[in-house]
Image (cartoon, rainbow, N blue to C red):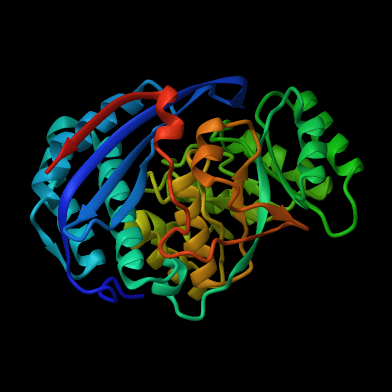
Length: 383
């Protein structure tokens, strides 16, 4: 992987925009729900007018999106405007070092990490556009054009029906939200498994719902039910020995990683996670997520990028997966999201459980911001 392939980038302009849209069908997780969709996009423009884009993560709570966008407007101009970037991973690391004291002093580790991750995404998109190649080919010239995917965000109240609609849309792999009581969870798992065809798979995500003992009990019946993996059954910050004990007792793969925001934590977690799921928006951007993916594959683990938000982060995740290889799948939220669909513009259509990535330079899509004007709630520009 090289962040040097497009030559030196000089950032001349930064635009940060927030869009918000109502959501008729909230995404429900074990600790709450997403009742509206919001995205904050960072656009970096060079002196030649080329533009690269990235998503600032901010799903929970959704009210944080405007704050994170304002934080980006406070931090990114000093870090990027007028700067020459000729090595994106090195520049990402330098930005994180420069903001470390601020993150500690403010206690805002997550927002700061998300802002820098979005800037890193935008730099990679911009570099690939300048080179005239898809992002995945800048990461690896031998990258795939087609990758497997799974339908995510299946809710506890209508999970089986959502799985059916996702199947009609081309999905062959599914992930159900669990952690809503054993009766509800079992009923949904049984109903979805009953309708599955040969070769289809079901995964579950508990969103850190259980303690160790409850996770061990759930892992037993989930394995018996033929579930493909159990994701984040416990709090991500529990001691290593808790995770090691759970892994030793499990008869199905253990997945996680979206809430591990440190290389040391991730390296330790590779000792018990079978499926590594870092999030390109929460922490690390493209630079660190691609490196983590390759490290996971080198340890014999499966890399499946985590993403449940806007289209830009989804496209960045898809490009990383296409570049690093392995047998992992792209997470695709199947809940309605007009903001995501407006940015995608028809890209990443599912067919027989796979998606074909756009062939254009960078992320391969051109964002029509004017078509999204009715959803825009905030906008700032810096030059």
